[in-house]
Amino acid sequence: MTDLTSLTIADARYKLRAKEFSAVELAEAFVGNVAEGDALNAWCEKTPDLAREQAQAADARLAAGDAPSLCGIPLGIKDLFCTNGIRSQAGSNILEDFRPPYESTVTANLWADGAVMLGKLSMDEFAMGSSNETACYGPVVNPWRREGDETKLTPGGSSGGSSAALAANMAMATTGTDTGGSIRQPAAFTGTVGLKPTWGRVSRWGIVAFASSLDQAGPFTRTVRDAAIMLQSMASVDEKDSTSADIPVPDYEAALTGDVKGKRIGIPKEYTVDGMSAEITKFWEEGAEHLRAQGAEIVEISLPHTKYALPAYYIVSPAECSSNLARYDGVRYGKRARLSQGDGITELYEKTRAEGFGDEVKRRIMIGTYVLSAGYYDAYYTRAQKVRRLINRDFEQAFEKVDAILTPTTPSPAFGLGEKSDPLEMYLQDIFTVTVNMAGLPGISVPAGLSSDGLPLGLQLIGKAFGEEDLLNTAYALESALDFTAKPEKWW
Image (cartoon, rainbow, N blue to C red; front, side, top):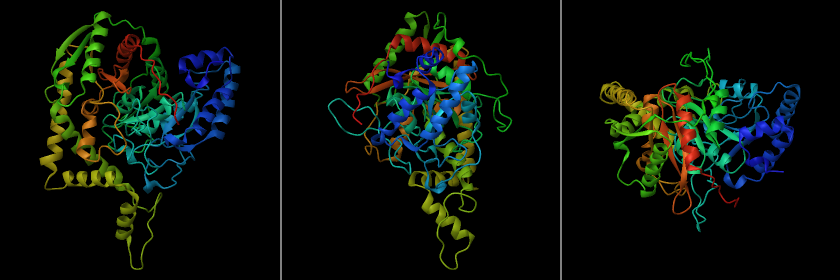
């Protein structure tokens, strides 16, 4: 029998219906891989018993002929998604042992479609990070290694547990969230597909908030087809989320024709930056040529305000983080600091937050509080929002000329854990991805090839707002041409 844990969702869906194996057998195969993968530290909560129970229910639905696309498919869930009765800490000590009495809309959609939960996946604390080193659970390790080198590498962040678990065959697909690149960058670092939908396409209800106008949930998968299948289930109009777009969810998988003839693909000149790996540039050029060979027209475009995106993002996102994280006070749930005699409510707040939040979260809360303060609001936050509008206008003008935009996903392959200690150097990892969040657009990272030291590199496609059908189809054509099949050699 084929190794069940290496199958795609599309393949497993077919084989489950053909009764080549059961959902219980599929779940057991993944439960075994999860149990053997502790060296990667990707899982913060394992739910093998729940997986078996859900797999049995999936088999019953399959037998009855009532089987949606994800019926029996084993998934891993990022720790940012609230799951009923299951520890959901957002990678932070301040939510110590928090077990929500409710289910996020996204995970509720997945379970309604018959998916199987293997557990919760580690992440940077409150999704703030690009290397998965700020989690209260400790760093996640990338299953990929440089050739001839045993240095432990980052799987990217903030959704590092999601990308590592998928790349290591510990889940058939995983969920992530993307505020500035936290799906696309980890996907590029692990040779997987990562899709960030349009802001408002997927409900944010029940997902712990970082920066509400930027956060968006999406899937990590092995193929573009699997990403279409996952998005079909994850996306929905949701009355509990006022920012959820009241737009019908199309059949994304049906849109995958692979035909890009006549499509115009933009290449932004501003994305050629100093210090970018020559290998990234080579794959970028090759990706454009692949699309040209399939009948697309390659067009140079300009996104002139790109250079302002990163500084504007690191004003807007900490400001929203400062506001959202004010709710963690040690009163109703999560961590509560031990008080000394004479301490009052102010001391409770101060001590709980000092003990519960990590250094990166504290840094961003302080930056956010500063830029929102009375004396600096206009100088920083208001100005950053004006820049955001200019970035959005750049994309609007570009999409009058092109159907999609092709860029690198990251400026380099995965780096070693602990190699980047300077916060600014870490923030630069998001240089190609934050513009998409600032404009609220969909973006997808597709594996492009391996670097000279054997690490995955990714290419990013950016689409029009709520144009995921066309974006996925272009990514499908690109994926077919790139034909990336490499897998990490198991060492864990």
